[in-house]
Image (tube, rainbow, N blue to C red):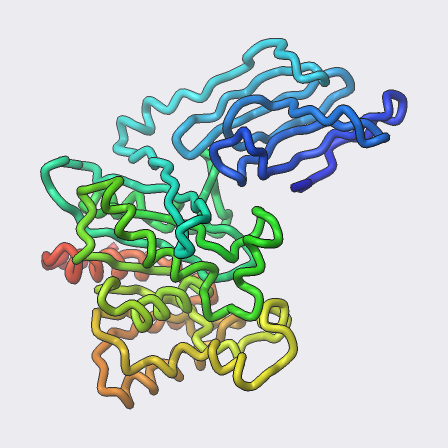
Length: 370
């Protein structure tokens, strides 16, 4: 899949471009540099390493930096035919590892259809003991317009948030963390992406998250499927609440912030992209508040009072439905916060405390003034 035009050499009649879905790569979302002739012949991959590549193209050579979540960046100098000139630099992450960084582990599982391969990453607890079992936190984003699993080592969403949805800090607390891209996310072709068409309520493959848990347990026996939690923001908040209400026997605790819990009252430019023009019966399926009576586990809801993307009315409407069903939940209001709730330090601390209490079964330490 062509992603970006890098260079057009009119004299040699060559086009250089970035693309993914390379069959030779272990992950379909690893970007590679290719060259092809104006006549459509001579297609060649110029970056042979299995990872995400970022290139800076010159006249006769290019600088290529590649990495994976489990491989620190390596920078090479290559000629435009792909031949290696030399290695320029290799990142030294010794200090990072000594500080307690948990290197993510890549895994592949089957989707709910039993056929499609899905890629994810897993974080082990910092004090990992193979003879123990650990609670799991599934960090999710339910929007169909982007993928959630980081691929390169220096991934940063540039929103002042914790990397990996905070799973590094949860590892320090004794949790296993996972991030998984289900069917319906982009970058893997139309067949894969169209799983979200007229299916926003599917939360970009939420059913795959639930379906793959037994396989994950076989791959990682230290996972405790009796203590599974989930959290997300925005479309991830919608997905986290959906998980709690659709799969209440699996997900025992959830944190959802800034969620658009009823697609009918969210902005049409996003909703109509996948649902199409308004159809009453279809759009009703995007209202997860209708399942409020299914809540069995522990749920923490949060919103920013200054949110101009997903307004607080979405969360309050969900609260009203939960109240009507006599369901217990926790609500956190951040008066000065906008849509970017995950960047708020108070929210981060409360989120950690919530999972420590309800998945680890421990009382979190008392808060101290900062």
